[in-house]
Image 1 (cartoon, rainbow, N blue to C red):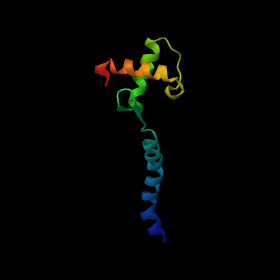
Image 2: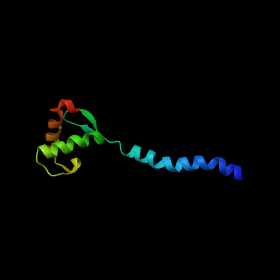
Image 3: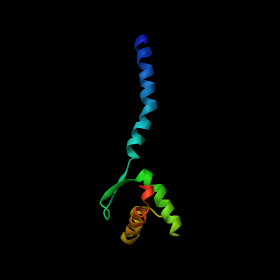
Image 4: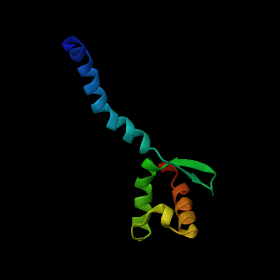
Length: 86
Protein backbone atom coordinates (compact mmCIF):
# COMPACT_ATOMS: atom_id res chain seq x y z
CA UNK A 1 0.00 0.00 0.00
CA UNK A 2 2.84 2.42 0.82
CA UNK A 3 4.48 1.83 -2.55
CA UNK A 4 1.18 2.60 -4.26
CA UNK A 5 0.90 5.88 -2.36
CA UNK A 6 4.54 6.74 -3.16
CA UNK A 7 3.91 6.11 -6.85
CA UNK A 8 0.63 8.03 -7.06
CA UNK A 9 1.52 10.98 -4.80
CA UNK A 10 3.71 12.86 -7.34
CA UNK A 11 1.00 12.62 -10.02
CA UNK A 12 -1.68 13.73 -7.61
CA UNK A 13 0.43 16.68 -6.49
CA UNK A 14 1.16 17.66 -10.10
CA UNK A 15 -2.54 17.48 -10.95
CA UNK A 16 -3.46 19.69 -8.01
CA UNK A 17 -0.82 22.28 -8.94
CA UNK A 18 -1.59 22.35 -12.67
CA UNK A 19 -5.40 22.37 -12.46
CA UNK A 20 -5.80 26.10 -11.67
CA UNK A 21 -3.57 27.02 -14.62
CA UNK A 22 -5.59 24.89 -16.99
CA UNK A 23 -8.91 26.28 -15.79
CA UNK A 24 -7.93 29.97 -15.88
CA UNK A 25 -6.10 29.58 -19.17
CA UNK A 26 -9.30 28.47 -20.85
CA UNK A 27 -11.50 31.07 -19.18
CA UNK A 28 -9.32 34.06 -20.11
CA UNK A 29 -9.57 33.64 -23.90
CA UNK A 30 -12.32 35.91 -25.21
CA UNK A 31 -12.94 36.77 -28.84
CA UNK A 32 -15.05 39.80 -29.75
CA UNK A 33 -16.76 40.20 -33.11
CA UNK A 34 -16.51 43.60 -34.77
CA UNK A 35 -19.81 43.91 -36.68
CA UNK A 36 -18.69 47.01 -38.58
CA UNK A 37 -15.52 45.50 -40.06
CA UNK A 38 -16.67 41.87 -39.94
CA UNK A 39 -13.67 40.49 -38.08
CA UNK A 40 -12.76 39.09 -34.68
CA UNK A 41 -10.38 40.43 -32.07
CA UNK A 42 -8.87 38.58 -29.11
CA UNK A 43 -10.03 40.78 -26.27
CA UNK A 44 -7.16 39.82 -23.95
CA UNK A 45 -4.87 41.65 -26.45
CA UNK A 46 -7.48 44.25 -27.33
CA UNK A 47 -7.71 45.75 -23.83
CA UNK A 48 -4.44 47.63 -24.35
CA UNK A 49 -5.88 49.40 -27.38
CA UNK A 50 -9.26 49.94 -25.77
CA UNK A 51 -7.61 51.62 -22.78
CA UNK A 52 -5.52 53.75 -25.16
CA UNK A 53 -8.69 54.80 -27.00
CA UNK A 54 -10.34 55.81 -23.73
CA UNK A 55 -7.35 57.98 -22.82
CA UNK A 56 -6.99 59.55 -26.28
CA UNK A 57 -10.70 60.35 -26.49
CA UNK A 58 -10.86 61.59 -22.87
CA UNK A 59 -13.41 59.02 -21.75
CA UNK A 60 -13.69 57.54 -18.31
CA UNK A 61 -13.11 53.81 -18.08
CA UNK A 62 -16.19 51.72 -18.76
CA UNK A 63 -16.63 48.10 -19.78
CA UNK A 64 -16.82 47.89 -23.57
CA UNK A 65 -20.03 45.86 -23.39
CA UNK A 66 -21.70 48.58 -21.32
CA UNK A 67 -20.97 51.33 -23.84
CA UNK A 68 -23.70 52.40 -26.21
CA UNK A 69 -23.54 51.30 -29.83
CA UNK A 70 -22.31 54.71 -31.03
CA UNK A 71 -19.30 54.55 -28.70
CA UNK A 72 -18.60 50.96 -29.71
CA UNK A 73 -18.67 51.91 -33.39
CA UNK A 74 -16.41 54.87 -32.70
CA UNK A 75 -13.96 52.54 -30.97
CA UNK A 76 -13.91 50.09 -33.88
CA UNK A 77 -13.42 52.97 -36.34
CA UNK A 78 -10.51 54.23 -34.23
CA UNK A 79 -9.10 50.73 -33.91
CA UNK A 80 -9.10 50.10 -37.64
CA UNK A 81 -7.55 53.51 -38.35
CA UNK A 82 -4.45 52.32 -36.47
CA UNK A 83 -3.21 49.53 -38.80
CA UNK A 84 0.07 49.06 -36.91
CA UNK A 85 -2.01 47.85 -33.95
CA UNK A 86 -3.87 44.94 -35.61
